[in-house]
Image (cartoon, rainbow, N blue to C red; front, side, top):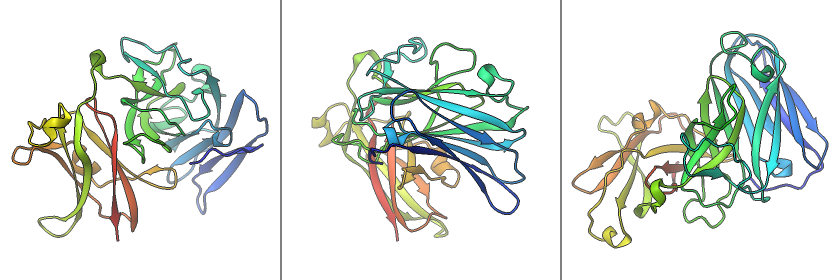
Length: 321
């Protein structure tokens, strides 16, 4: 996702319908802040309702909301509010210690404030009244920041501070080394919506990250039964780079992975979420290992990003012929 210099930018909403999806386009004309965009969500009979708020034309990313079931018609307005680097200060230090906003490539942090026209706080829709289930939220943005622990910050309803990390998925196709760090994507789920921001949390107690030796790998395998295609994702972890030669190697119980693809990047749904999205430790090899079932994925190249509270995000690729 490259920064584009445009005088207009569009936000799109896609709604389920009986025969074909209906779409509505929101056009934003100003080229100076503040930037805001509104989308109308309407009930449908099948599928999901998705609203895409595209601020990429002015370098402020793309925020997407997906509702499993919309019950009433409502409008959501997203304002992309720019601040100076480090300018998002209402971060709860008890819940999210040592956490700051991620600086986008254009040199600002962005807080996405959401309002609406129905009965919830700030007019936002109410779960069980205006929609069912959890809301899936995705944020794509352009940043050159080096990330420790990525945080998809959420300022819940009726709260003045960012207190939640709703992150469930994270892709950074160029990590590491972080030379360009383009195209990060964060995904999460929430029962309600208020404000969101891309945040970075430093490692606990000022510690440096552990070392992934030397690289994350994703290797196609055949399952024991031969019925499902498998990709084995592995990494070795050590306290120092010198230990990468012969160990000792460490187990990481916090590591999780996300699979994605371009354009976007967009997240890929895996069968059974891979291996319950948990790595197991192979004592013989000293590797942290997770097998992911790639059945149903189309041919092409995919990214795998692993995040942890022990090391900075790492990424590799695999190809399905």
